Image 1 (cartoon, rainbow, N blue to C red):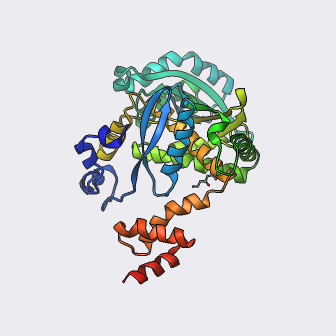
Image 2 (tube, rainbow, N blue to C red):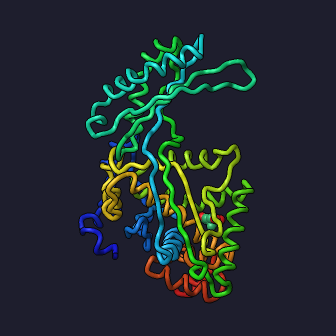
Length: 406
Ligand code: MEV
């Protein structure tokens, strides 16, 4: 599948600096807008997820991210592709209840009034109900504060927001039910806001790779497999490595989130909370030797993406990105996102455990270096090749080569 065939001309126009987000639209999206800024919009190739092929739009400033994702996906595609699933799509709204005189009685009363509270929440957002979504469940938690004898109750409202990320819907619902919650619990509702730790909206992806597909010029596939497993264990055990490991995972995911107009800060925050769910920060992926000696990789993350709502319908380049992806639901987009994270991680680990990432990275980064040194874009490839040939990639070398041309 080629990007040129996958996009209409007008969709491509939306990727021109002047054709996408105009300053006029930007001014309606945020406050005090004085213009728009641009980032490269690229396409990662080779993705097969649950048997379907995808061209994946990525918006990112860092060289080699798109190449690495495509490279990881190419290996997995040869092994049959990623298997992915989106588990549930319930967002969470929180109502914090302070000054509750009898916690146990309040808990009981709130749970008994669940149906009524759900109805009230849905009455406040009839549009969501009409789209087949709506408030589905209520739970009540206790939050104790160390060093004090204070305990608050927190009501969680679980909302199916369909294909929207649904922050405004959830926030509006929590505000709508807060007066009833106060009456029922006998306390005071303080915060009424969604939780970005969306652990009822998880997505998972997995891959199984015969070792032969992992071989490099210098290393056998089995050796690369074992080294990737060892690198994965290192990230599971050591927070300093885990943060870098997860940064690499998020390189790919954030780029898709940006391209598709999603709230990447929310998903970043949720990802790192999820990485701590056992009480200690650890890797977001797992690598192990699986059946038949295959390399088995897994990822699991909260992935509350949307394909409608928010700024998604406003930015023409986002519409182009979604057109390119051809996902039918937000859950499908979530599956692609986690597969991208796993592909990104695979490619990074394979490079790190073999020749290291610097050679490949600098070869791709050299073009940016050439531009930063003042080269015209049409000269960037030539200058990059010259720097690579002389074994020095950097601003000094680029400036020197440029000076020789005049
Ligand atoms: C660079 O942006 C990302 C990596 O550092 C990730 C990793 O170390 O796993 C290559």
